[in-house]
Image 1 (cartoon, rainbow, N blue to C red):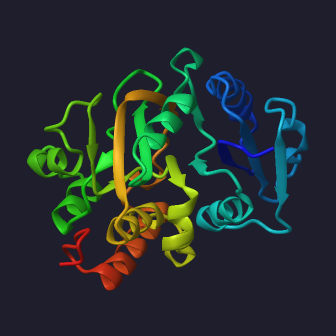
Image 2 (tube, helix red, strand yellow; image 1 turned 90 degrees about the vertical axis):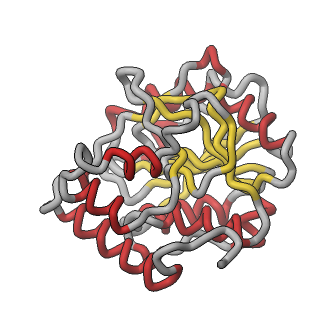
Length: 263
């Protein structure tokens, strides 16, 4: 049986998150033919325990722990559905919205869309502004050096503050916590770049999509929840250093002001 949607989830040690994610995911498909591609990232307790939530589940086993991008590439390599959803483990849905069904219908109605994302909310209902413009040096300073209050316009521009959260529009890139990818587009532009290590692999993919002629679209009419824990918020943390290292790779590859058209 062919599937409408393959959903990639990585399991390492997120036991306290999985039951809510998978139960609400199962209730959000609205009759879609879905398959869960569950990557067991060399977990201590095994991913087999999570098979019962989605009827059609394929577990992909890692002998050693891999990076986030490498795990998502395992999902992309195993996918056969026309759409593949790449998402974080620290997510959950409101089944009443039927987010998955509506996002697939959104993609079906826009054959030129290679990658899309829905509205992302924090657990308290605050909007996460998942549609973003490409990073700039002032933006990095604002977010990494605690200058956000002094550089409000820079932050507002980055997060498309001029657009309503429930709007639909083309954007530079979408947060990697929820990326719905057209498999035909991925086959054209290629997999995630694992050399970033951590961070910016989602930004890089969105730019490559756009340069190949595919639209990157934010669809705010439907959403899900993200229990975001920004480890890179502390400017002296390991994650902050990894973020900066990934940004330098981004700069070396694409320059300071990349555009979808390559100019």
